[in-house]
Structure formats: structure tokens, C-alpha cells
Image 1 (cartoon, rainbow, N blue to C red):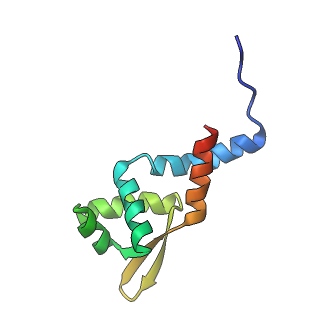
Image 2 (cartoon, rainbow, N blue to C red):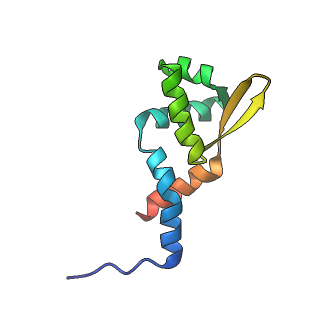
Length: 100
């Protein structure tokens, strides 16, 4: 029986760092939000919940998860907060998905 080689400390660190990202991406609605933000470049929560036809509270909860995983960042303009994708973190998620 073949046993897999042990993970190096670099791979463990990389997997640990990508864990939060993968959890954030594990919900279909958050994937839709990422696609929408990719198309729009930036959007406020009002744009997002109207485009996806969901409640504002639901959009805000999912955006919080994406923000905590650093997949999106925010910019305040007056009373509005605009969301945009953090493409470096999304690339990290893509690389992590390839090693699993």
C-alpha cells in the first residue's frame, strides 16, 4: 500500500492560508457575487442584491464572508460602500485548488 508523501511546511502553510478562501467560495451565492463583481468591477450592496434578486441582509452577510476571506475589498464613496474583487487572493484560491 502506497502512502502519500508528507506535506512540507510550505504546503501546510499554503493550505492553511487557503482554507478560509475555500470556505468562502463554498457557497453558490458567493460565487455569483464574485462573477457579478468581476463583470461590474465595483458595486455597492444595493446593486448586488438587486442584480441577484436577493434580500439586502442576505447580500450583506455573504459580502461579510467574502470580505473576511479578503476576496473583496471595500471603498467608501460618500455614504456608499463599494465592493471590488481582490484578484491576488482569488488567484491564491485557484492555485490552492490545483494542489488539492
